[in-house]
Image (cartoon, rainbow, N blue to C red; front, side, top):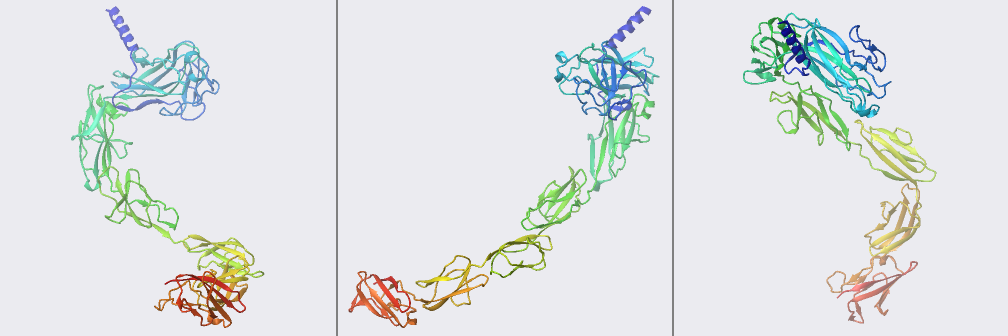
Length: 625
């Protein structure tokens, strides 16, 4: 009989020793043990005596040595240069350079366990040899770790498993491994052992972090009696509300189930609900968002501890609050021509904003945006709503965009008389002025030519620039006055910007006067600054282009308007062959198209006008029958 029991125990040990790693697939409790090896930077303190037989060192360890650090690869350059932030703590880790001899390298006792409870052990591992360094052949010796969980006496193996070969990589990557075990009646602690299965040599270097023990139970879900899972939402205007919750364990771990319902205002701090120990629970009337979960244990006594039971994912009874009106980021003002900016508001997370063109009703301008860029100035309205819910909307927040006028200016061209000064006037009152001369008054006095600018800024801060181009006054000497039919053209000896007049009072910038009756005139030319005025008297005679002698009272005769001002004048008419057809004194001269009593045929005819003291004038006209 003893031989049989011994063989059975050996077989059980062998079966347990070959168990595979695996995570708890159900709900989990709070950790009863969490070794994160410190959250600081640099090298940490050594492990407590008895945990390892490896030698502690404050730099990259060699074979059979270890360190506690967050920084590696400084001495052993074939290692990765960093540990990626992929663990739970992302701080220091246990760095192990495996000994040439395979065997135990980590042992620690875990206390605080609850009896008759299933637990999950887990840890993060990483092969820290950098395959890209090519120092070791074939990527180096892979790491291979065995985890074992023993009872507190160290004589009964509760579970164990191997990671298998973890080969090196070109970039660092953590992997997480786990196994589950069940505590025995009266058992309050276990022993964790880690073994190096790999042979010594190039490679087989590892880091371990976040060793965690926590209870493992059935995967328990919470739902309402009508099938809602995870969340049940009610608009504030429809509160209070009460619902019936049901806990459903999947029976994957526990044979018996004991329940304790809990509630929380924030899903972080949980309190037991007195008397809520059945599989079903009614919340009663609720006016504010409340979170619920249920603790499940195999033994009634374990319900009092979060580390001896498992807890479901929380169920949220959400009371969707009426959102406050969006918080305006301020009315905006811009100047004409500036890019139109976006109006904006702030709201808490989970709130959407819609934009309208009216304080109520109106047209929807933009959905689900904290900002809106209007096409023009005006007042616009932001309204808040709880995202994803068809609940009551907030009051609307009015935000205005004002587009202010820019000062209206036009550039000027001025002339300056030699040796004199000129007043430049910005032209607008009640503004701020900034001249390129450094002056700040509305007007300035200048005594030299050049380009002068003034920046004019109004009360809204909108600016415009006015440019004065100042040149020395141009000479205005008249060289000739030309009469072309009814037009008078005044020509000057010099080029430049000048003013022209035929009466000395009314000046224009053009030197052409289009419709001037015949007569004796004086031409006036002056510069823009009135530095000097040039004059010339001239005769202006209007020559007809054609005559139509049909006695209708219009253009019946060749008559010169303006010739009457010149007593000593003579007019001669010729045909195209130069034959004189008619002549006479200028004043009162006319020709009706006849010669020696006969009507001359249609065609072109020529005139010659002689005026005492003036040049002869020649030209032609048409006779039309």
